[in-house]
Length: 389
Image (cartoon, rainbow, N blue to C red; front, top):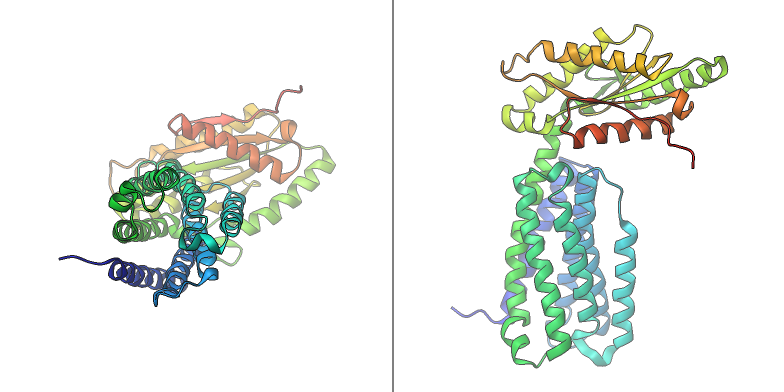
């Protein structure tokens, strides 16, 4: 069976539309989170590409449609990478997408209407290759490093990146009438490849979204000023901690901020189910309430991350407190499976080294936890003040 170019483009558009509508509706009504919104934007941009190309299906060339299609495709691919960064809880790279999109727009307009359907094509493919490569790298780092769906997504993005790069090179060297371009990199072949990649990316992204939902569990639920785990919610903790730090600053009293991140919470959810993950979070919060000083403030920042603000005369005293919490945590196994003993990565920052700003203390704690995580978790790190230059 032979499928002509027009049929393949039509099939590609239908698949993109079906996948996009399904993903966007699922985001709107079921899992309206930041990652879902970013990837929904990618699907909407991809559907815009099909509409723009469809404007010329009748054979009449429409210049503005090429401009729209090039920019929309750049935004679509960039949004996939941006969603992966958000999934890994890294800073957004919107400026990269904006820069490449502006460059593609400028290249398309510079080549002008005389270049026809291929205006700015090489520049666009190079820009796509860069963002696809960034997306593939992001899919195998951070929270996605040991995730099977992340690896599948990385393979798909690497295939697309290499294809886009080689196509740009062949197009520049050989032109659209060259034998190699017409044989391997023509529109029909690329439409067929895109059809396969869209399906793979959609399935992988949907699975990642579902897995992300299991990692939040009880951690994202609140009951008044409290997290569902029984300690202060993130917003309530910020208010209370800021007040305590202000008063401690005035009284010249030392405080320490202790951050604790439950190790392997996504793996617990995946292996034993969401109930086990909820139990891990709830038991961790209970151990914090039992071990932390009575007058300390305990907050639930995210699903598996907690913060404790307590009085401390030194970093050594704060470390001793963290060690007490760590010991209490591993003494009692979870009821879900006797082999599961919770561990956590602890980070400590005190007002002697970092002042009385909650933001500064929080950044220092995050850095310390990151250091412990790199070492394999289940340890404590104290973030000291940076050395004066």
